[in-house]
Image (cartoon, rainbow, N blue to C red; front, side):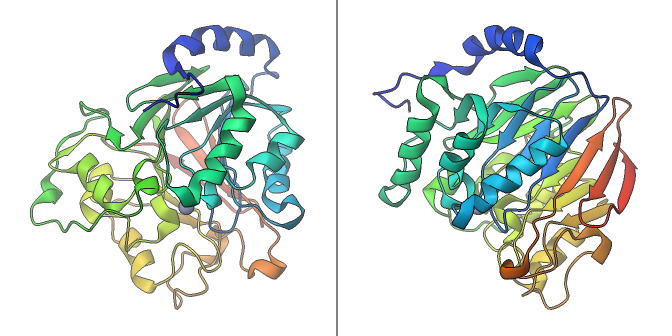
Length: 345
Ligand SMILES: [Zn+2]
């Protein structure tokens, strides 16, 4: 559904002209696609920078005193050598995903905005209003299946406003893990509306499905796995795996590396949340933006955790992936510089 007062352009139309304009202004080409998981303590804020220098921020984290999350985003942009954002994608209009947008927009230039185009409930409306005001006529509504490119990086929308891609991609097909798989009731409609995106660079694929819930994961993956397999999976709902992380979905998409964008007391809040991730066959590395203080020791290795402190002392370190054209990629912990290199399979 499109907002009647603000006609939104279909994504395909705006992109051609846009890509041309961006190319001239892009900084010197890097050799890698870089992904930063910015620590917003249980919200979403993931920055993707293509080798061409074009950039997309997915979500902005929370509204916090002194613009905490907006400042952390700007710090990651500086590390990446960015002077502006080409795209701002808001997965959905919950506070932990869009809350620092107004502050961020005061601090950095943003060229284009993307959202799911749906309405929302009364309690989220203030965030949607801020978004519409900030985006103005640079807003684009993205539908499931829409594609845009940032140089050699393809961004494909997987879910949007409760709709999903149709035909399977990336070796998807009938999913053997669906037999007897448990379903769970739908979460809040706004989670179900999540604009989720798959970023592909050569043989490397990274998926960020925002807060897509268990019920939608089952629709995406059963009886046919439409997403296919991915290289890096960002946990939906921050690893709060009572309402997301359906095993039939996780086992079908076969992530090699999992990044949990949790907070000290949000996301992984029970041992079985972490265990569900660790039990997925073929996972070679689990990285967490935070030590999960309520998980009773069920966390990944210390070197793969970016932040240990509770909120009052938290320094907001990021995790980063640097992806090379040959499919190898290095995960780095911004806290201690610890890194591991993987080969996308
Ligand atoms: Zn969330």
